[in-house]
Length: 268
Image 1: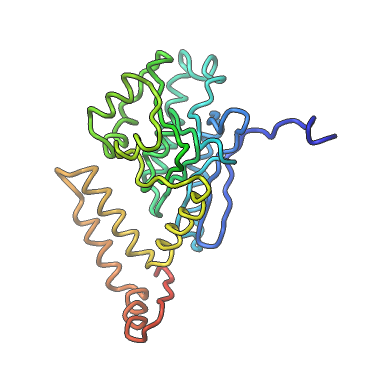
Image 2 (image 1 turned 180 degrees about the vertical axis):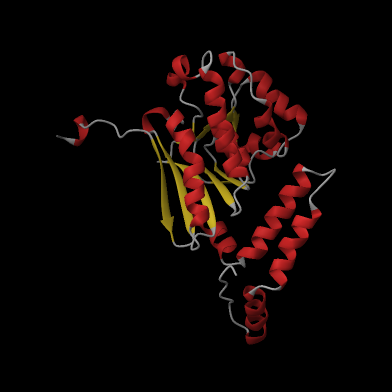
């Protein structure tokens, strides 16, 4: 069978490892990497796999190819999967996916090529960092479909941008370009498309080279203080800091500094 006549690959969510980096990749090229129900269900599984691998230091979410991070949920499934009693089950898939990303102990970076729409933007908002290319477009068109945007998914957006900007995003459903998204706070950095892969890998490598327990403690502290500002679990955060002080990595960091060499951290 010729490549031209071969059937399109089934939508999937794959995990690819490259040294200390784990890439979770949305593969649904025919629909701009939109997420099917099965792909939503796979997010917690792929995150768990990356978390369980002691060699992985940073998790990177991206879409296959260079046209789209993700166009969000696959609307072609909505007639059956997101109507009536099925709607709550579909929402549960979304909740579990978003929570898996937000609760990951390792840093998670969204590498955003092109379209980042609807649930795709929701996924990106749950990551720790968001790097986009200059061609990226952002929107949540729920109002254009007659959907109510679940309040549980608004929280991560409000952690990035002001209430009025998120209202504009949800009220209008219109698309914002990369420079708009940067000004709003939806992304942390915008780079030329040709530099996106290199930029994300460089950033991830910088993180991966540091002591994993220190990075984990910083992530826990920032997440806890921003998500529960009125009543943070300081005992949990103190324990994370204490774990750094008694770690082998802290001893290695001190020795490396005195010996004027790069430390070799093990995450213990």
